[in-house]
Structure formats: structure tokens, C-alpha cells
Image (cartoon, rainbow, N blue to C red):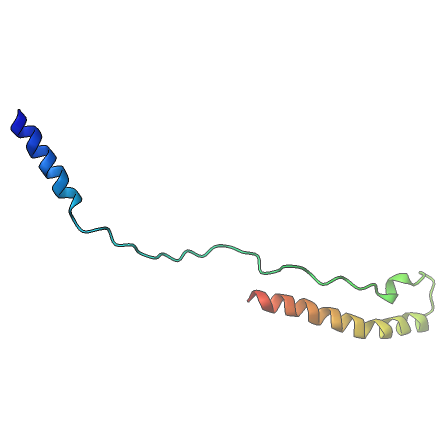
Length: 84
């Protein structure tokens, strides 16, 4: 019986003397939102018009809003481009 216990101890020690396991680096994609913040929506002049405004007032308000709208659209596209 003593020989069997000694043999088990020797075999267990021999198993520990083997080569160390190889460490492998595994890259796993992790979802992270790319949008940190959206640009603030501007106030458009068209929204402040009265329902009975004349056609000329509506066209002038649209003309004033065009540069503001294009700037806002450019900011949104820049945020979206950062996510691609």
C-alpha cells in the first residue's frame, strides 16, 4: 500500500513538471457607441411663423433657414462619418 501511495505522489509531481500552458491573445470586438453627443438642433425661423403668414414671409424665412440647415446637416454628417 505504501508503494501505491508513493507511486501516486511521484506521478502527480511529474504531471506538474510539464511545460507551462501557452498564453494566447484573443481579440474580441466589444460594442461601444461611437456617438458621444449629437449637435444641438437649431431653431428655424419657419417654425415661428404664424399660420396666416404671406407667401413672401414664408419664402424669406426658408431662405434665412437654408444656411442654418446646411450647417446643422454638415455637423450630423460629421458625427455619422465618425462611426464608420
